[in-house]
Image (cartoon, rainbow, N blue to C red; front, side, top):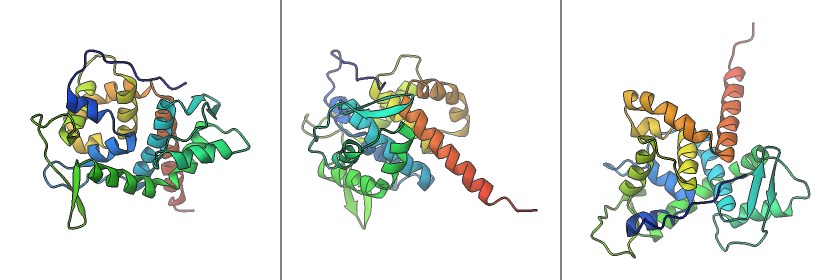
Length: 236
């Protein structure tokens, strides 16, 4: 079962609130962004595709459209959300005549990974967080001096996630999901030094164990990487 987000009645920061309005795929793309040059951290393409697929399923779960157990992923509410990032995948699950497990639907959704990526970036531009420059997406620096109708900055997203990793507090459902997906596509290798990452690994693994879909995404990536490695083993 996917945990639902906890209420945060004590959180009144408008930038943090707007950051939590982003879809998981949008947050993944922001975490990938290099603050200084506006380029994206180089991560394995396969891992990113699976993370984006998992992000869509996570959003559907958080919106109460699907749920999971160890054996299956099933529809709770078939109603479209009116969101082009999510409704295509939801419709595919709803229209399926059979019930499959989470791993199956992750692999089905991977086929849409490029479209998910492009739509996520376009939405970040529309929100005013990024802008296009010479066919690249650049970070537009925003500060806390802007009113609430300005969207959260890349820095706010990164600080929030790093704050969870570097603390012992119980993370909320959204942060568990983002950390799980970010670890799958090795984002933390680009955000932390080798020494910092080594120290943070136990905490990251602890958080990942709290999330079923995130575990399935990681398992799928590992299985494929193992298969690819075996394919290149010389025959004797």
